[in-house]
Length: 441
Image (cartoon, one colour):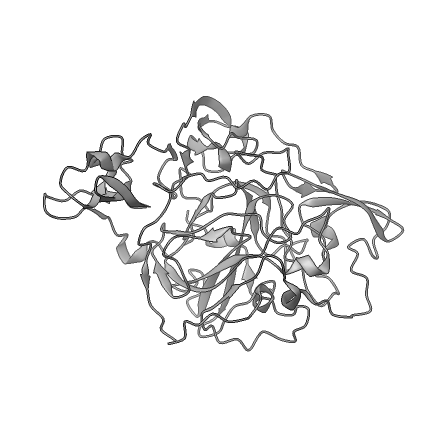
């Protein structure tokens, strides 16, 4: 990333289902719907060592048995989640069993997204309910006759056209992009995107590293930069190491890399005898939200905006680093859910997703009386050192993108919820606000 930017169903649950392009190995692509995990950064410069300071202000850091469904207002087997207190909770779900999260309520209504729809083709966001937002459904006699994933998103009852040039999907203007964040790009290549076209392409033998907003993506260095750490063990800015990334702080032990952290504000080299450090953003960063990496495949459309999608989807390869869009504290997460999309999603799949939830330090930038919660859904894993209670500055890695739950292709779903101070947030209500309204200019 190179720059900062800017029908609710009658069923008991409203839809969380979001999707985008399939990702073959090794990139985010419009074809080959594989689930192969791709690391953009390996275990070097894209990975954090000590990511943030951990605190547990509630005194309760225990793992709960709440499923991801507990983040919804109403979901199968529950009544009302609006009495939640905001205490940090986490879930580790076995990949082979999600029964506790997915018991369907007997509402007497059909679970088929095409129920009540006339014959024809519909985008999932139009149907609502258990429909996948980025699939096109063929409805016949009130039943689903077929469903097809739309790699670039669905619009007006048809899949959007996929552009031939990966740089046509570059979201943040001219600059360097890892192919895994571009539609149809090679995940192991760095693209020079200029005016919507590819001006150059470099194969990254050691993989391509997606950086925080404001820092151009780059190829990972070949070899271990810490081999040049001649002042003993400690922290070194990449600029002081042969082949090192100048925006990365390396932890070197016995001339080998023991960890690395991308510095969103740059890396500060200090005098001999003093460890180098990442520069700290003033007040933790700006009181606005950074845009996630990837290609927009589905926009916010809920709460009177023509659909039932409560966030924005960004298609990107599995393993793409997600950086905290705003300074805050991790207050919830769930891991261990596999992908369960199968030409649409059954009720048992609908609420089984991995996520991480961040409470912004500065509250809601557009409403001083409210708190802002930021969700990243369908993640693959949390970043190293991140857990419930971890505080992160803007631009520190929080998670890696994935394809968990009801997802027809690897992507990041970002959802932002604004609630009165002191209240907890849940997903899929009209407390959810369009993320783009909180993005940094």
